[in-house]
Amino acid sequence: MADILDDQFETTDSGASTTYPMQCSALRKNGFVMLKSRPCKIVEMSTSKTGKHGHAKVHMVGIDIFSNKKYEDICPSTHNMDVPNVKREDLQLISISDDGFLCLMTEGGDLREDLKVPDGELGDSLRADFDNGKDLLCTVLKACGEECVIAIKTNTALDK
View 1 (cartoon, rainbow, N blue to C red):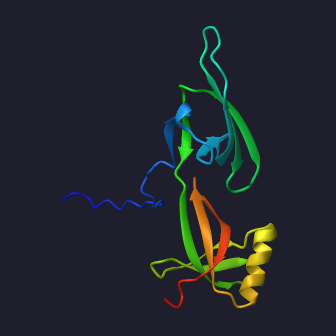
View 2: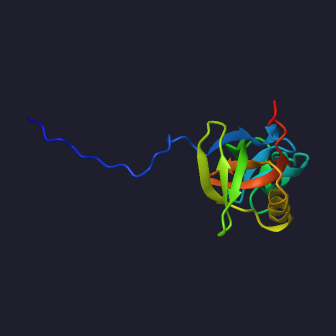
View 3: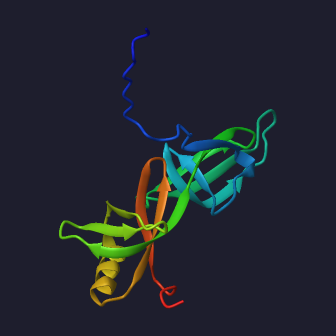
């Protein structure tokens, strides 16, 4: 008889890529692109004319979707750039733990307790609204293995 193999796999993802290629000239303002290996939202774009023998160049300015840092890059318009697979999801806020983690419920009814309260003004308003008894939806952005709460809104779908 053949020996039984006892393979153990540590990862559980589908193996899908976190980015996909797109020609630089096809990128648009308010779209997403990888700048300096970070997922960014394009806030400014300009195209220079071709030189005597060269390509048209595209100058892009983007803001990191997680840290809000500004990144710039220049790329020939015919070259490909990586675009992150960005997923947006609204989750219902159930509670906030003492150590600053959010308890969120997905649309399927599963609970998640792995996201921290965001820093700055957004985190302050989230805590204040939750303490005032408001039922909140947190918008979570996920890209390149990172995720964070980027916006909150009052849940209006309760009594429907």
